[in-house]
Image (tube, rainbow, N blue to C red):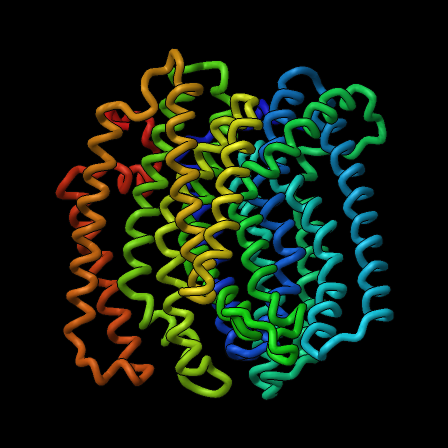
Length: 542
């Protein structure tokens, strides 16, 4: 058994690079997964029911796997490994045992409650389908929570790429089933929804087995937990506020899902209840949200995931801590801002290429609605990217309450905007509410970080960082203009064809990439070099 402190400390840029590469592969497969699901179900009530059921256990994957549980566990696991031999193993064993018992108990209680609801209530076909799908996919939750702990352990031991490989298995299982459905012409059949649900659960079991194998050189299971109990209680105290603080995006997504599935839960169409959303709203919202989560998941969360262990390691060194935080923020904006503007400029063609045309594709109305949703989600990409880094900086210093309070306020703003904007914008109002609350949260976290985290280490954003932010903004705006002009070269009548939209999309993406990369070199934007170089430790501009 090797303790966490013995693992070599990779640079932030190497860690981001390895995490992002594996995450990129995972997100590409995830995009293929969502395209297949869109093709299998279309913009229908069946799609909304499947997406709603998938969102519930998937909330735990994102909350725990990409946030709160790891945020509470990693600092404690790192410190335990530094103190004495075996302490880290005891903490990990205790955490896994308690987590398995608690989440399994929750799963059993919820399954029994939903069974009672099905037996007692009088349900429409769509509502019954939604409840049954939730019951099928709920066991995903306890399995993926344990996977999250194992992934955090791999990160502490420097195995960032391995820790990010779990979603590859999830997407592989679902793609396999979805491809079979398309090949056998099962599109629109409710049976395939249940098979996809079972594949989701099987993927979590496979991830658990795989991560345990990867951790064999670093971890020894033990039933002796006495020395780890106090540290475990401390971790629990940190987890609750961290779950709220880092889980804002996931909680907002869950709230969006609850509002978007309201027409299914309450059968508004049949009962004549006035509501601005319909049975297809949740399917359109969920499928489209994956497109803005693609750059956020590949790079935004990758930067925060890679930065967190380094921030925890430097928590007692003010200068190194502040320098790591600055670099994390610069990398997040370097990727998040052009991603935001890029999604805005290509939204119609991107939606058309992925979900339009062919059998069981989105309807023309569904494509228009989906593009409007993506327009609303896009401004949140850069904000959530920075939020993840800022929140983890607080957690690395042991402050979980500040991000929690800010997140609660942002969530309340999101709910108020949700209930206001849907009456004018439909499901796109949910997307705009998410982005607006994310930007407000980013501003507040930035101000508080400057006041509370950087004492003794210099300002949060020094002159070099501010100049870098300005250069990134200029390059991003130029990229936006170039991509827009490139798309306009193709005649408007080509928009109605798949090949025409694909050409416009390719032209805009290639032009944007070339312009942004070229300006990074011309303006001396060092973040690009950080990501491609083997080491940035000697870069005086870093």
